[in-house]
Amino acid sequence: MFESLTERLGSALSSITGKAKLTEDNIQDALREVRVALLEADVALGVVKDFIERVKARALGTEVTASLSPGQVFIKIVNDELVRVMGAGEGELNLSVQPPAVILMAGLQGAGKTTSTAKLGLWLKNKNQKSVMVASTDVYRPAAIEQLRTLAGQAQISFFESNIDQKPIDIAKGALAEAKKQFADVLIIDTAGRLGIDEAMMQEIRDLHQVLTPAETLFVVDALTGQDAANTARAFGDVLPLTGVILSKADGDSRGGAALSVRSITGKPIKFMGVGETIDGLDAFYPDRIASRILGMGDVMSLIEDAEQKIDKKKAEKLARKIKKGKKFDLEDFRDQIQQMNNMGGIASMLDKMPGMGQVSQAAQEKINDKSFIQMEAIINSMTPGERHYPDSINGSRKKRIAGGSGTQIQDINRLLKQHKQMQKMMKKLGKKGGMTNMMRGMGGMMQPPGGGFPGR
Image (cartoon, rainbow, N blue to C red; front, side, top):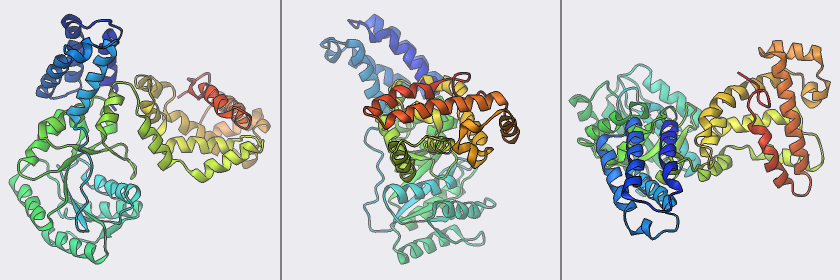
């Protein structure tokens, strides 16, 4: 996400970072580049104009001229203004109401509303320890109710049964009564989408809003539609009291126009963004963290939270005990590490959140992409348990069999075994004094492109 914007802004800001003094001329040059970068990212023109004017006014003010490092202060100003544009400190859900707190989901057809409903339910269950019920009032789209039922099952949250013969208003009333009966903390209502904004649809959702009096009314919008996403959200906001936006398919948007336009155009904050097709692919939207990622400074807090939430602690502790006892790091352990990385969103997602790695991640997707890890896992899965535990036993004939079973080449097997050897040496150092320092030094081996580490595509 934001790859192209990060690259363009990085280029624009690098020219001014080392300046001992900022003048209107050198600021003007940098801002011209920033303006082009934002417009190419499909940020709305009005938002860009306001952003540039505010940055210029602050950059020529006393906070820069009095600084010993004007270039760095300029970048801080850009960061602050990005945070402001995206709505600093406005993203929290308001669930401090008499339970069940109702969340009404609105949006156009195909925006990812039903998926976002289930993702939000799982997020509230895991992050806030809430008991959640979901219900679908979409009686028009074939299999919409069945889709939400399936997703609710995956998320292990309650689902209120409904069918296409019922009226949406009756489904909503029934779901609310059942949620109260089950003492659910939160009830999320998925509504019908349309191909365009029409009065019949708007009246239906207005009626639902009146009956449910939701604590939150969230508009789900496809990030890939750029600034059109903000315009659609504004149209909905004119007839429905929206409280926030969920930006779906955000991981597929390398430009970032929607994220930077929605708050300014609609006056409503982005509260969540969809980041993947899996049921747990939803992140709270923190403008300060997103601004940091846009400027290539990483997002360490989100990386830590991902690790805490998604790493299998039992497996990690088991490996730590094994290494401490001096036992060898085998291919079973290596496969576990690959799976842990995949659970955290894959290598590209992790690199995107590491400080200084924002621009590297785009190149990394070509050289150390997730396909490489899928291939590595396939190779290990094609081995016998004995081969995984004793990699040195893998001779030429075994390599040929493993390559055939995993659909790879013998050179891919060789690269994997070499990579494992590097990891094995690194893990051995963990059991010694200064193990963590040695491990960080050894991590360089994990970042090698095909030919030196990971298998090629």
